[in-house]
Image (cartoon, rainbow, N blue to C red):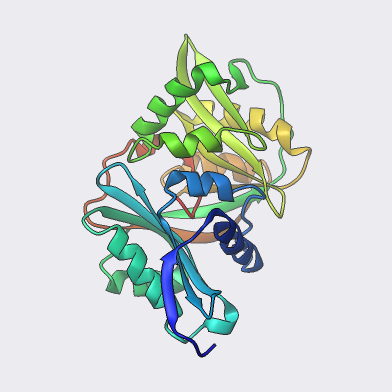
Length: 278
């Protein structure tokens, strides 16, 4: 690659390509993530192109007026060590300037992120295993009539309301289930097919028993395949439940923020939505 490098926003098709790269890196994205990711912020995906060929990419998604999240930071293997990654990093950070910025950093990059002003807040671990699903009282499929209430509940747990993203994320081919008790939402979760097995995320619930009920209800959709959940370290009781159920703890990331960490209701987060978008 010898031509001039150009950084610009990515189209939906190019976001799909970036997610294919993520799959090649072993990040195990969902099979239909691109449209929902792109809907979260159509201007929040950047690529560095050389001679019209994508060389590196990043997501830098704006939420509300004061929060953003960095992910999908990948350079194509043929373009590494040439500064292409830094170009998209700078574009993403400029796009999120003035906001608190979050990311989930793998261990080998955390010192690098620290040098750029990010500070770790908690660790997240990937738990993987199989679980027999079951019909659970109060756990039902999400329908259009309850979507506004779920968006409100989600906005009390996630740092900002993310209506555009959820309008897509709660659609087929993903399966979304909600737990309702005493006519109140006690939690909800989403299950989606990935290159390997299924991921559940988000898994938001008011407590451990509610999280387990949703997990068992969602596990029905997996047909006995492997389930992956990214569990924040503060949810030790839930991690203990998964371990007892035969799940294995895999790689870890650190949730890091540059700027004041958001004051969201993180006690309800039993499973992160995605490591790419927060």
